[in-house]
Image (cartoon, rainbow, N blue to C red; front, side, top):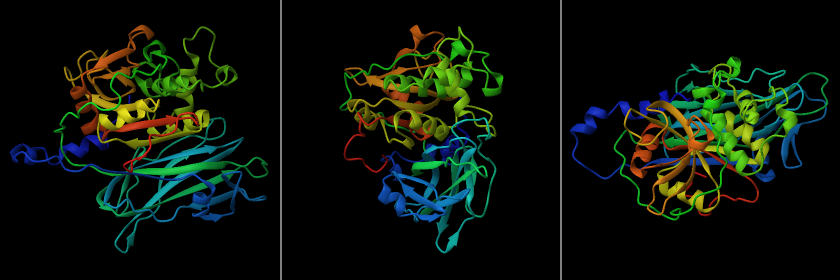
Amino acid sequence: MRRLTSSILLTAALVLTLLASPAQAAPARRIDYTSWDTPRELRSGTLESLRVTGGRVALVPGADSGRWTSPWAGPGFGLTRLIASWSARTPGDSRVTIEVRGRSGATSSSWDTLAVWASGDRFVRRTTDSGQADDLASVNVDTWVVPGGVRAYQLRVTLARAAGQAASPSLDSVGAMSSLLPDTSDVATSRPGVGRGIVLDVPRYSQMVHRGHYPEYGAGGEAWCSPTSTSMVLGYYDALPAPAAYSWVPAGHVDPWVDHAARMTYDADYAGTGNWPFNTAYAAAQTGHAFVTRLRSLREAERFIAAGVPLVASIAFGRGELSGAPISASAGHLLVIVGFTDTGDVVVNDPAAATRAGVRRTYDRGQFEDAWIPTSGGTVYVITDDAHPLPANSPGNW
């Protein structure tokens, strides 16, 4: 399960006003994804005690910590939400810390910590830090919330390792989705597009078969929709972790790689496995590419399906609002968009089914968009490998 507190606030403030307003064209959904990925892009940032080598940012010899700071990035609108994504390696006792600050006019905010992250948990307590607040923004789990909006931001990544350790943490890429979304729950159903009739062969895993597993990582069941969905996409790419990685899971556990994914995505401050960028950071180490963004409608999702790229989508719905769902309601749920019917309805792998046999579902297109666009802002995990490039001609959000 994934809380949607900050996203639900997108719809709350103007509900009464909208009900009293005459019908009008839907306001624009402003979404931008900016990343620093190539060696040239990474060198465009400021490097302190770091160097770009082998296409990655790493510590210079002799340094135990260093900082990479991005150039100021402007999405072209006053962003009110930002979610960072990264791909990094943290061998031994090492970590990366992700921070952000914004600029409004001549005022720059303080640096806010979005994550202290490591791929493992032997040495580092992987965590976010909700509740930080300054004159411009605050942090809600994995989301930087800027009520008044800012027109530019910077990301800062600190790489650190234990004194005397030879292996360096390294950063392969870092980016951020920024958005300015309309305060409305009125979503017009999109018309079917290029994904009609395409269903990807994504394996089916149930989160519910893990009920009660590992209380220290959320106890499975309804709490593990995110790592289960992420694991389904990794299985599609034949990129699940090697058996040695989950050898700590006792024999007889169904799909033990899901237990492993839950452990590797657990956020100690949030006390759960539903942290969006923690899931994509875990996936990026397996497939090579993963990030969090938002889409404007299922027409954009269809472009990914047509390119052979399944999507993990974040939804929320009340009783009777998503016909055929294996659970009656959810304040925050993750599932995999795997395709579309010939008429444009959504084919999903929904991990909330009690068993693998019930995971594949088809949901009404309009009901699905109502459960996805106004609640999480159309949030998805985009996970790819080199054989499945992103759809061409992005409208800015990938």
